[in-house]
Figure 1 (cartoon, one colour):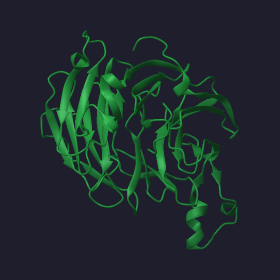
Figure 2 (figure 1 turned 180 degrees about the vertical axis):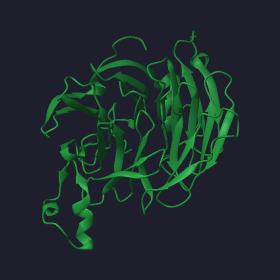
Figure 3 (figure 1 turned 30 degrees about the vertical axis):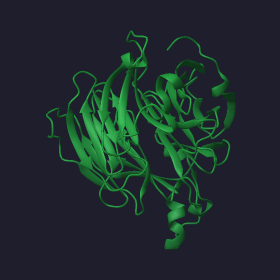
Length: 358
């Protein structure tokens, strides 16, 4: 993510009720609804940080050092337990995982921690007596792309496959080290994968390529393509894809400064090309005609990296999307099934003071 106002990266927690900022000045944790700072780790405690991951709303954080003045190495993941007593910051560091190359991403669930490097993904038991369960080779993965299903029923992990444009899915439910059900591959795109996301239930995976024009959704059981969603016709870098909690909708943000919202449960709500009414068209434009365009969209500061997710439903026919940007801004928009989309809240989260001790 492009760094602004000292923000190196942003992450939602597993149910999108909180988000955390890895910053030049340390770590900050926010509640989303209502928006308030829930706590922070100062620079003298953790130094500058490149990545941070929360475990739901617990006291555990996974931290990777980075930025201009790090206290911890970029090749290590440190697990911080803020409930642990002790005056020295080292007293609160309960686990450390060290690798040979920089850590690019971390994903947590109640019983596992996943660490992504440029060509490899590691899976460990977590948090008690951690031991390595699996390691998977990937093609070059400079952004550490991966996603981990938080569901108790489904322990699914997805990451880029060996073939360009492919996804690898692994069921982690077998806890014997080194033995998992065979990974399976979905050939999702022709160019490199740029963004991936699993829904909360682990039944659907969404992906976009570096071209950034299409988002494709696949059934994780059958591997069949469910739907193809068109973000636009111009290439774009997608920053984030997320499903609503019940998988009725999907949102996506890109470097175009637009957050798109698509309907999944009732795809008739999505816009179609005007040419779709014409009937038979040539092969060149048929790809545009067949695609579904977003039901609604809104803009955030252009060229400003942001993450997006769905907020709590305020009523049956009104849904909300939250966008958190690296420039320190917070945006909340509400949308209705007919495509109406209006701003409900705007704030500068970096200017909000601590609510209470984390």
